[in-house]
Length: 263
Image (cartoon, rainbow, N blue to C red):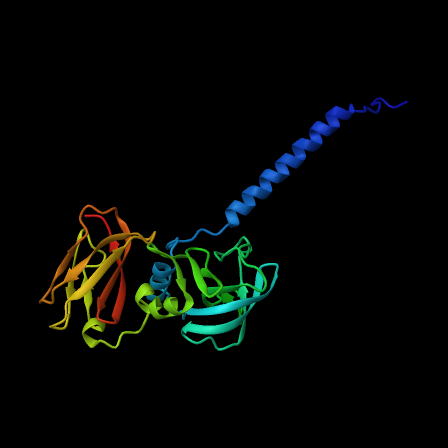
């Protein structure tokens, strides 16, 4: 006769232990997901300042902007047909876009549908060779419906005809290579700054227009510099952080990031 008789636990005790095990497993999985989840520097919820910022801070990655048609979506991947190159020419007629898999900072592919047309701002993937990334840290896409570009184009523009969008893209996003030597030679200093920046190298003559954007795409300041030896722009009173300064002379546009730091 056994000195340790079999002890049967009541069913509700077994269920309680099972539920605790499931709960602990779920919490552990959630913890692992959070630990692996991407943390990224969010740029803007508007397409134009996002494209401008990335083009100025891409660390060698070429930003391609194109109108595409979605061919198929499978898992974290999306195949698209390139319909029209708007900024830099993609070397392929069809491209595979890598979306969000929980570990990188790419865009979730939920908003996209097969057969629909979009404007995408993409770059060669750092995760897989031959693929392109659609960043999830800002506004890198816009839908095109019946030849109308829709969504957060810029702070003041939610919809444009496709042709108007094409014509205004360089000015809107500040990404066109400028042929204006005076503008290309402009230096902005000090950067980082504690409250005021100076411009050096302006060509004499035409006045220089400027717009200062926050990272949300909001216009913080706008106006015009008169050419001079070293005009200045005050950022006093603004919250510390990153800003995008867009300069324009006639059709020439230049965008530069400004870091407003501590005194």
